[in-house]
Each structure stands twice: as C-alpha cells, then as structure tokens.
Amino acid sequence: MDKRLTGTLSGSVTPPPSKSQAHRLLICAALSNHSSKVCCDALNDDLCATMESLNALGASISYADGAFDVQPVACRKGGELPCGESGSTLRFLLPIAAALGSESTLTGKGKLPLRPMEQLTTALVQHGVEIVEHRDDAHLPLTCKGQLTGGEYTLPGDISSQYFTGLLFALPLLSAPSRLNISGELTSASYVEMTLDALRQSGITIETLDSGFNIPAPQQYNTPQQLRVEGDWSAAAFWLVAGVTGKHPVTICGMNTDSLQGDRRIVDHLRRMGADIQFTDDAIVAYPSQLRGAELDCVDTPDLVPILSVAAAAAEGTTLFTHVGRLRYKESDRLAAMKSLLEAFGISSVIGEDTYSVAGGKACAKWPVDSFGDHRIAMSAAIMAAAAGCEVTIKGAECVAKSYPLFYENFKTLGGSVEEA
Image (cartoon, rainbow, N blue to C red; front, top):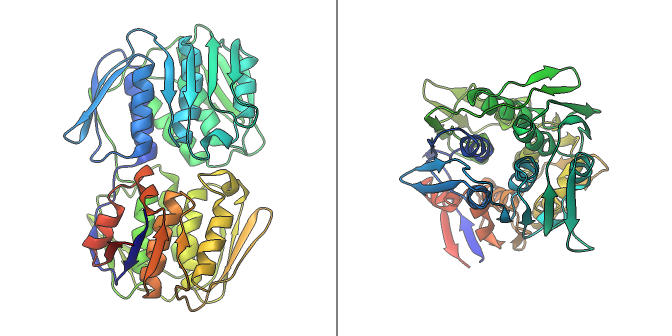
C-alpha cells in the first residue's frame, strides 16, 4: 500500500507503549508461577508474534481493553512459533523453548530468516540442543529439540544484544547454574539493562560481572500481579525530530524521562546538534531549531540512525554517525535504505564500513520513497516530507504496523495529510 503525505506538524502526541519493554514483560509473565496482567495501550505486529509464540509454548495470553491477560506456561507444548518479522521474538524465545525442552519450529517472514543467528544456535548446540535449519539459504524455518543444559556460555557482544537477552531469560529455568560471558564489547547494552530490570521485577537473581553474568539455577519467575509498559522512546524520536526540524513546536506526552530505554538518548543526540528540547512536569517539547552537523556515536542506539538522518539532512554541515555497521542486518539494509530515501529528497550521504555521513542541504521530494518494507524507513520518510515542506509518496507504507500501527493517524492529528496513493 502506498501513501501520499504532506503537511506542517504541530501540537501534542502520545507515542505507543515501548515494544522492547512489552516483549520482556510478556515473557516474564508467561514464565511466572501465577497469572498476571500486562497493561499495554496498543498492539503491533511484533508483539502479536511474541504473544502467539508464547501461546504455542503453552501459555494462554489474550489482549483486550489495553492489557494482556497472561496465564503462564502450564504444560510445555512447543509446535510452531510464528515469529513474523520480529528479531526479538526469534532470539528471545529460541533459548526459552530449549530451556523448556519443548520441540519447536520457529518461522519468520521478510528478512528475518536471513538475519544473523549462527552464534546463538552454536551456543545452544554446545549445551545439549539439536538445531535443524530446513533451508540451505536461510536460518528459518528452524527446529530445536532436546534439553538445554547449564554451564559456561560465551558469545560475541558486537552481533546482537538479543542473544544475551534470550539466554538471560532461559538460563534461570535450568537445573544447574550458568555463566554467560561477553566476548568483546557489548553493543546496545541498554537493551540488556532493560532485560535485567524485567528479571529483577520478576524475582530472578542475576549477578552482573565485568565481562558477563552469573545465573543461579533453578529459579522461579514470580512477577507482580500487574505490570505496565511505559511509552516508547523509539517512537517518540520521530516526533522530536518533527519538532526540531519543523516550523512549530511538537509536544510529546506520556514518556518516562528516567527510562532505561537506550533510545531515550535521542534527546542527547539532538541537543548535540543544537536542538532546543525542554522537559516540563508531564511532557517534552521539541522546538524549531537551527541544527548543525555533529559526530554521533550510535553503538547503543542503532535504531535511531534513520530518524537522526532526517535531522542531519536539515542541519548545517555534515553529520557523521559511527558504529552503524549492524544496520545492514535489520528489517532492511538501513544504511542503503536511508541513502535511497535521502537521495529522493536531493540530500547526499556516504556509507562507510562502520560509518554513515549525511550532508545537510535543501530538501525537496524528487520521486517516491521506497520503504523497503521497513517501519523505521517509512516513518522517517514521513517526517522528512514534513521537514522539507513538500509532498511525498511512500511505497509500502503499511509496514509501520510492525511497531506503530497508529503512526499515520498521529501524523494527521498533528496537522499532516495522509492519502492513499
């Protein structure tokens, strides 16, 4: 589905709940020793994938009236776990299925079957699990059999923090303790901190070491009766950039300014570029700003690079993003996708081995933008059109449903125009 967007944005918006936190709280609740409720004001495709996959493992989870009702895993079932396009669902639940001893086949769509998995599956095989990949040219569908065992695990820190989150969820369920070692630097470390926080809330003890974790076992998950998912800083980033690159302030409501979400650093990144962003008692206001190029280290905030590239296009001078090589293996090759997006607006950018640079300039839509089926590319294109003050057609615009189904409705709430193209 293609959409045609234009308009000047102003006013107030409330982003959806944090997808990253919701995945984690749902998993903890599904592994708990009692039923619970996870309050989450909106659904998206990735969360549906996690809910359906946990149900396949033996939980009973339903969603209604802004909350998940979670009956935890009672009998270990297994079967097909439909991960959709969600890397979190795949990499979190594969170790859990192995820890439960549930023979399971994990499936995926889009680019998910091609995303890196080798280091995680190798670690599982070394600890008693049989992994069968059913295609020669992709990791999925993948079947796991056998019982995961405790012991010493070592994984590289620079591929995906999701490997560590999956194992941190799974290893407390085993009959023997484990040590989880990090080889090299752990990238996207804030996501692991979110995992550790969810585990603490659920009564799980993890000892953090200089280069890894000690995980006592066996342990029992014991979540609070009710959990609430906070606002999503990854989603808020789009409206913050809309405010600082536009003609009118944009106010973002419902955010936890003390959040552990790594993408809360969007404020720091934008302020380094000269953005005027103010915190009030109950909201964040992004004011139109004269931005300037800067060097931004995105080792812990890779998901922010697409929307920060929009800010860079509006800035004076060149912005250099570092530690961005992993963006090639997301829902799209996000470096190539953003280069294509910016070219559609007449903005130059250069892709390096682990860097990406954007030269600010006068943006004007020259041709339609391809979303490459990537939600963050589609949303960045919409904010780019608003910042440039021009109309743009986004191809495959429906992909925002992966994380933010109401994005276009919120775009219209702020004064934008969205039409079928």
